[in-house]
Amino acid sequence: MNYQQRIIAIIGIAVKSIRTMDKASFDVKLSEAKWSKKELLGHLIDSAYNNHQRFLRAGSKSNLIFEGYDQDEWVRLNNYQARTLDDVLATWITANQHLCLLLENLPIESLERTTAEHNFHVIGMNRPEAGSPSSLSYLIWDYIFHLEYHLAQIIPDYQSLNLPFKV
Image (cartoon, rainbow, N blue to C red; front, side, top):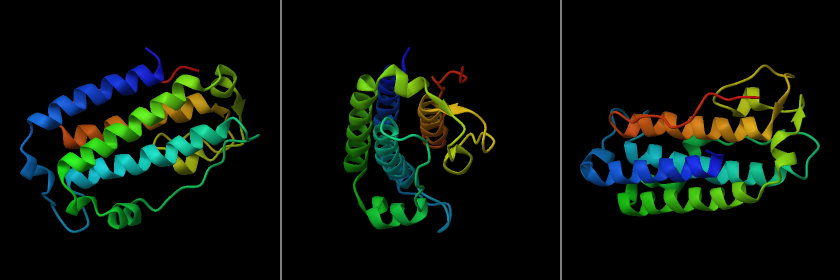
């Protein structure tokens, strides 16, 4: 299964599960410092938007160094907590479908080109050593890992579809 097919499958499973869950549970915050399930889903929207531009720009760069972003500030400014679950869910679906269209069209050379010039040790969830060879393919895999990590926080008994990364 390729990356875009994996993300589309994840969306289908997640949406089906989320639509059966109690909507009120998405507003619950265990503390002011913690995100609600709705804010977690909003964070995944921000992640999709940030990674879309990273994936898009990777083909025209000689390195894989990308800006990070202030995740807490983005969740606060996008005010996911005050939005309806239906709005946040629809935006999350659209953002990931848009990202999948890009993935479908990325040249294989862009995906497989390796470089030691990256900052995945800063922006990634699974952080390889600085200066170790890596690729855009790894960054996409890590995006899916991150996506499913948070879906497991939102959806009880969520089962990951992502496979271990293979070079």
